[in-house]
Structure formats: C-alpha cells, structure tokens
Amino acid sequence: MRTSLNEIKLIDEHLFNQGDTGDKLLFNAMLIIDNGLADKIGLQKKTHAIIRQYSRKKLKAEIEAVHHKLFNEAGHRTFRQKIMSFFSKQ
Amino acid sequence: MNQVELGKNNLGYYNCDKKIIYMVQQINFGNTPADREKAFMMLYKKAFPAVAKYVSKMGGSFDEAKDVFQDALVIFYEKTVNTPMVLHTGEQAYLLGIAKHLWSKRFREIILHSPGDIQADFIEEDELQFSQNKLMHYLETAGQKCMEILKAFYYDNLKLPAIAGRFGYVSERSATVQKYKCMEKVRETIKQQSLAYEDFVE
Image (cartoon, rainbow over all chains, first blue to last red; front, top):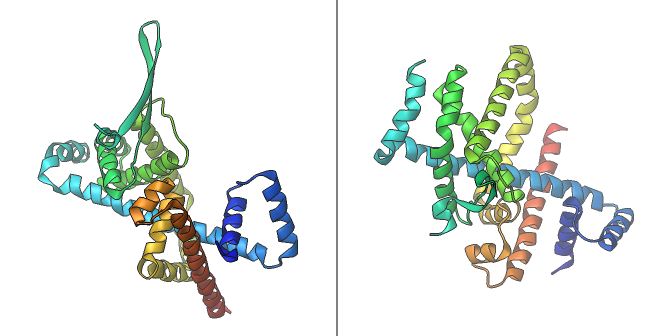
C-alpha cells in the first residue's frame, strides 16, 4: 500500500483508538515531527462525519421505502387500519 | 430457515425453577439492502403499533409518530451494527423506549425555543447548510461508489468478505486498499470544498 494510504490507515487507528502501545507511541512521535498531520486528522474526522451523514440519509430512504410499502400495498391493509384507528379517534 | 427470514437470532433462554426469566435476542440486519428491508419490515410490524398508540395518546399526529419511529429505527440500527447488542426486553419494548425519549425531547425543544431563537439559528446555519448540501450532492453523484464502500465499512460495519463479495473485489486485501483510496478521494474533495467555502466567506 502506498505511503499516503498507510497514513490514512494510521489516522483511522488513532481516531478509533486501535493499535498497540508501540503504534500509538510512533503516531505521537509523527505528530510532533509532521506539522501537517494534525490538519489531516481534523480533515479525516470531518470525512467520517460526512460518511455518517450520507449513510443516515441512505438508511432513512430505505426505511421510508418500507413505510411506503406498508401504507400503500394491498397486502398490508389490516396493519394499516390498525395504525390509522389510533388517529381517527383524535 | 435463515436468520434474515426470522429477522432475529435467538441466542438462548435463561431457565430458573422451570420458569423462563427472559429471552436473549439479537436482531440481524444481514449484509444487503434486501436483508435490511426484511428486518425493517419485521420491526415496523412488530413495534410501530405501540409507538403510534403512544404518540396518539400524547396528542401527536400520524406524521409525528412516523418521524419519531423512523428516527428510533436509525438509532436502533446504529447501536445494533456497532456493538453486538443483547436485548433483555425484546426489540418492541426497546424501540418504544427510544421513541418515548425522542418524543419528550421533541416536546421540550418546542417549549424551550421561542420563535426568535429558531429564526436566529436558521440564519447562522443557512450559509453552512448551502455549502454542505453542495458537497453532499457531489458525493451522491460523482463519488457514489466510493461513498457506498465507505458506508459499508464504517457505518454498516460489514465484515471484509461480505464487502469484497458485494463490490466485486477478488480479495479482502483489494477491498481494504480500495477503502483507503476512497477515503483519500473523499477527504480531498472535502478539503477542496472547505477551501472554496473559506474563499467565499472571506
């Protein structure tokens, strides 16, 4: 794996608190030597936040598709009626 | 019969004085969107009636019950895939618990935020939201394959063989290398986007 990809792997291990004591010491030493590393860590953290945001959006779309099936397909009429009965009494 | 058909995997029973005290269960969301659809369908049928009944009792609408339940499902999914969770109460009671918590949180927020506060928040977030939406749109279109790989690794927490199989990689090693290449690509896109945003606001 090329150097830049290895660096991404090491940053991931740092962010998720993985790796043994030796790896952690080495990474801390790299942080002192490499001036740009702290910025890369910040950026990778931001990337993880974006991945989570993207994934949640996709998951919500999958859940919405299930909801659509349950409230529109003929096979789920009894379920639908049961749910709607709670709100018709309001 | 596989686990997805069942929607859950019963891990065992604890028996004491011939009485079953509680059942230990673990839901299985599988590896593909089709597996997840089956699991969500099962959870919807099992747990949504109790949540809808509760929200209705509290004076909420059908749409509010739907929103609260869907958010509860997202929380449930994230907890289940990230830490092997053992439920002692059954997923119905667990989801109802999350939904009740979300409902009271929602109610508190409405009371605490005066219309003035909400408007100020919106103005501050407006520019940032515009920049984020642009980035998300780009990642959903040009970078979709990479985002799906990263989602499978980091969010769905799928195992390497499942990821290699799903995305057509010959080995687990190739899948791992691709993950880091994608991380590099997306990270660079975010960096460029951040720089452009800084130029815009300065």
